[in-house]
Image (cartoon, rainbow, N blue to C red; front, side, top):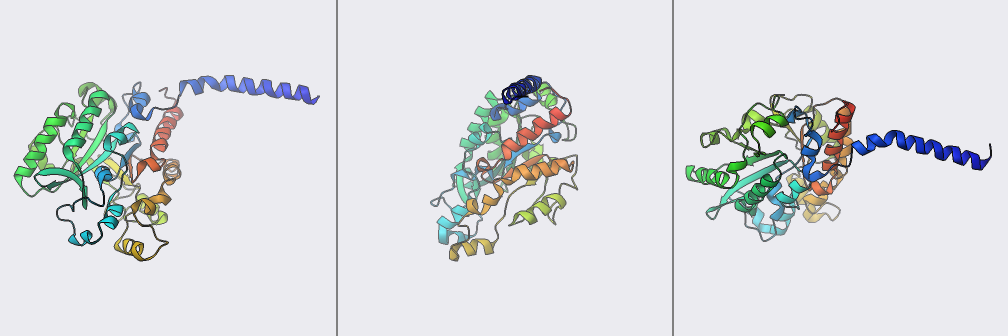
Length: 343
């Protein structure tokens, strides 16, 4: 056969192959991160949220920490000695919570403290006013009723008046959009929320004592389980995520009645921070310290799924620098395709 005829046959085969797979490609378009839950599961409302890979952020509200930020209450006063260094290790996110949601994040953490008569988000240093964050959450919920957002509110207020003030803020800004805790995580589906709690896409987890203020608060003690890692390198982190540590179970030892959160983060110790002051080759802040993890989620999640581990929520630092969101969305899509589901 002449080279010209070989080329023609090759082109015909390629064309046939393309047309044979094109219906599959066309029926599974690229996901829109801003509406990925609706895009993937609107035809599959029976899907349990516990079975979905959900990208999340660690200390989500730290994005506004600056070297000029005030010290948060109860933080070590020694942190004031070098505010520039403190801010570089305290900041875990670059983007606002609204921007995080727009880019696909569906689990956020609100670390709250009282400061000068107001409530702020903080991580050793003061970040942003809670009012601003709640306004963004309200705006998001009003325009994205199918995008379920899990909100973990962390606080340890000393007085009842502070707790009541926080409740008033939650009620004022989010009251219309808070889903009622219908079912435990091992039973809760998208359909339960989309139908029974229509237009209420926010799930707000609070300490058990906060339930006395409203039945719409979800008891975090009963609903959330954390991996609680404490690693400075990827090998130790991977081991802790799989097998757990003294502070929490790993992927092999989950409580299926709860949402499970894997911490895919490095936690610097005092030695790491001290070295950053005196050794030029050491990272000068959390951003550079975390860089080895930026490309790691894809490989890690692929390995976990191959082992048939029930991955649920994964939280990271500086999420937009990682491939976490893309990894979770593609893994969710691939799981549906493998099960013969048409989204």
